Each structure stands twice: as C-alpha cells, then as structure tokens.
Amino acid sequence: MAAMFAEAASTLHGQEPDFKTLAREHTTPGGINELFCTVMGEERVWNAVDNGLERVRQRLLERGKSSG
Image 1 (cartoon, rainbow, N blue to C red):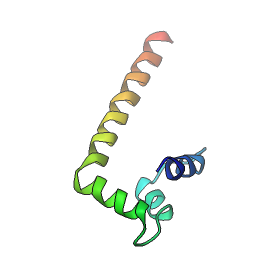
Image 2: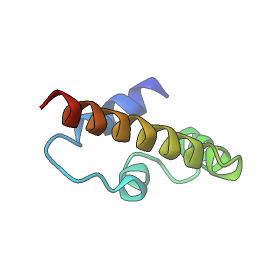
Image 3: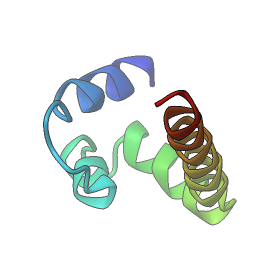
C-alpha cells in the first residue's frame, strides 16, 4: 500500500489532483489495490480523509493570512 501511495503522490507535482482518476490509474482490476480502495470507499474512509485534509488546508490558509 505504501508503494501505491508513494507512486500516486509522485505524479501530483504541479497538478490539480483528480483523486478518482489517480486511484483508477494506480490499481489493477481485480488486484489488491483495487480491493483496498473498494473497502476504503465502502467504509467511507475516503470521505474522512478528504474532510481531514480540507481542515488542514483551511488552517494553513488561515495561518498564512495572519502572518502576512
């Protein structure tokens, strides 16, 4: 799993991320990564990750405004 995330992250530099496409490009149909992503979706883990990252982004933006 770590290798999947590392490879996916390496393709994001300088781009607006499209995580659905990214996940699709880094999974083999019927493979372990696909199963993992399916379970994560069924358990709504991706929603929690998205919410957490958004809150971090908002905090960073707020700190940037207060220091400038």
